Image (cartoon, rainbow, N blue to C red; front, side, top):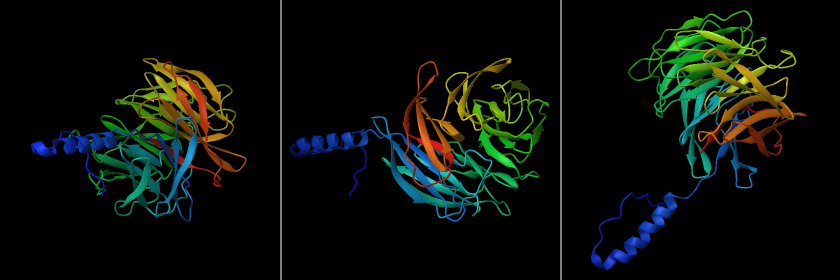
Length: 357
C-alpha cells in the first residue's frame, strides 16, 4: 500500500513516539525522492497513436522508458504542439479519432488518463495548449477550451473557416492560432475563467512575413511566431495586434525556414529550422528583434520545447528514415550544448515534444 505524504508528524502517544518518528522520516524521504526530467513525444501513427517517453538520466543520456498507446489514431501534419505538459498532467491530440488523451505522471513513469472528446462537430485536433485550469484544442474547423483536468467543454467554441491550423498557444489575455495557409488569428480570453470568449480577429501580416505561419510561443502576453517561408521568418505580436517582423537566417526559404518555436529565458527564442537542419536562435526587443545564430542538427526538426526550469531544450528530428530526440543543456547566457540523443526505435517521424519535470 502506498502511504500518503505527510506535511506534519501525527500526534502519537508517548510510547509510540520513536516509531512515529521513523515512519515520518520514511514518508519524508519518499516525498522528496528526486524524479528525472521526462521527454514525451508521439508516434502520430495514423492507425494507432502512441506516446513515447524518454528519461533524461544523470549521465546525461536519453533512455527509452515507455511506449503507451493513446487509444486513438494520429495522422496530423504541418503542425506543432500536439503534446503538452503542465505540472503532473499532460495531453496529446489524436488527429484521426477526434479526441485528446490525458497523460498522468507518476514518479518516473507515465500513465494514460481520461479520453477527452471534442465539442460537437469539431474534427481533426492537431495542437493543444495547457494552462493551470484549461485545455485548449485547435483542429480543422474549431478552436475550443475545456475545463482541466475534467475535460468538459468550457466556454464558446470558435468556428474556423480555414482548415490549415498549425498550432494554438495561450497568453495572459488572448490565445493565438497560426494557419499555414498564411494567417494568424487572435482569440480573446474571458477576464474571469480564462476560457475562449467566442470571438476571433485576424492579425494583418506584412508581405514579407505572411508565408506559412507555423510555430508559436508566448512570453507573457507577447507572441513570437514563425512565418517560415518568408524572408522575415520570425515575428513578434502584442495583444493589440502590433507586429514587428524579424529577418531570419540567410539565405531564406527554401534553404532556411525557422518553423517551430520555444521560448527561452529573457528575450531568447529558439526555433526549429527544418530545411536548414538547425536550431535558429532569435533575440527580441521593443523594435522587434534580430537573428543570432544557428546550431546544427543531424536531421530536420519538427518540433521544439524548453523545460519548465529552463535548463534543457529538446528537439525532435528525422534523419535517414528514423525519428530521434536530441536534448541540449542551456547555460546562463542561453547558449546550447548537446548532451544526449535517443536511439532509433523504428518510428519514421515524431510529432510534438514536451518536458515533464
